[in-house]
Image 1 (spheres, rainbow, N blue to C red):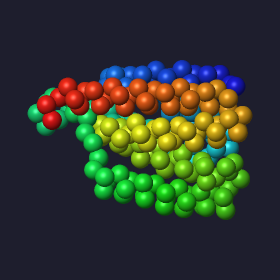
Image 2 (image 1 turned 90 degrees about the horizontal axis):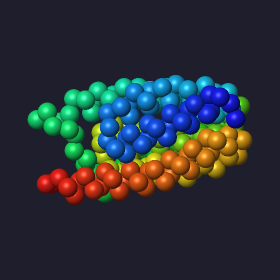
Image 3 (image 1 turned 90 degrees about the vertical axis):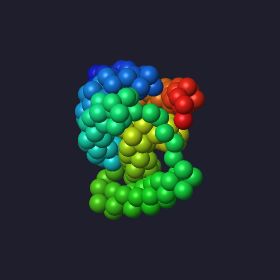
Length: 188
């Protein structure tokens, strides 16, 4: 357990807590957290996860901008839902890209657990994009990602990070409930 992993863990919990509260400061906290974790994952030879942090950084900037911009009427962005067809599309895209990226990493690097690492990369990108768009199903995506990540990080002896993803798992349940409640409160 390195000081970087400890710092990333603390920033991660803080950032997700702010996101659950739909607070704009979740985005800049997330930017710092993903920068720290890029190093942690690179050092553990979880290259897909290290690359993921770069993509997270870009999507975090977009999410911050998108949430600041608000809706077309200047009001805060509302939480929305995906259709069943959109969910099926995102799942299919996730499975295909996970298999492709995992195969690439397996053949071209010394990556540890290349397919599981690829799954985390691809489905995290999908969940992060949905979060930036303020789509309720982002939390379901995080539940799935966190379930896989707990095992992967434990297997790679990143115990604190595995524990962080266990906390993230429970926070994703909390986030889903909180965001869903704001939908009920709004006249949809």
